[in-house]
Length: 261
Image (cartoon, rainbow, N blue to C red):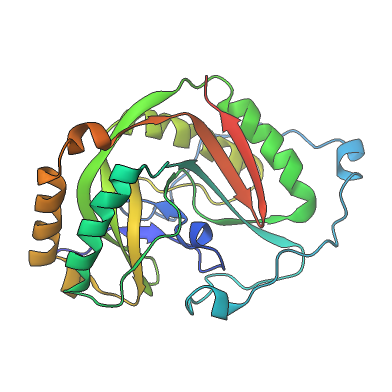
């Protein structure tokens, strides 16, 4: 049995931090990036923000006992860039068919609280860098057009530590547009000396998750049955074709939206 694709999910508190970055395999550590010119942030901008402000409080009881990938420190804010996925009524109807079937193979599975497609790993920003980071990100996203994509291929994912397993719908059309977006997001990450995305990403919408490595239970027969449900669902071809209209950045408990043209 082949290994499930890894996903770079942070182990922070909220679901969207937990479901952080989607990918096929990790970027090799020795990979070199093209040099990027870095511009200093003006002192007038930095002086607007205190470097001592605390990030959101962490309480493991609020997020299903997930284990943090990086420790919570005062002034550190877990940051994640993604495209939100609007869950229409018919999509939730499909999920109501998929989840009970999957739970017959792995009863611990629970539905995601929200849905999105990741464009970055979960990274840590100091509080006083949030607004400068978001402004640079907005500049890089300004030229992108809205586009349609389809996510209809059921796939099993784990985070890098294999402490969580996810059922997702992988993108089957629109992949090139996602790669273009990630290329620009990576440029922003490099400007701020942050970790870029993965070399061979698997863009997907996560539907459900559970603690632990449940690949053995979910791959094979379960995966086949879930794909059959998707393929046979009424109007699934149109239902799972979605218009990407904005890029969103979440840093701690702050949200920033960047509409596509």
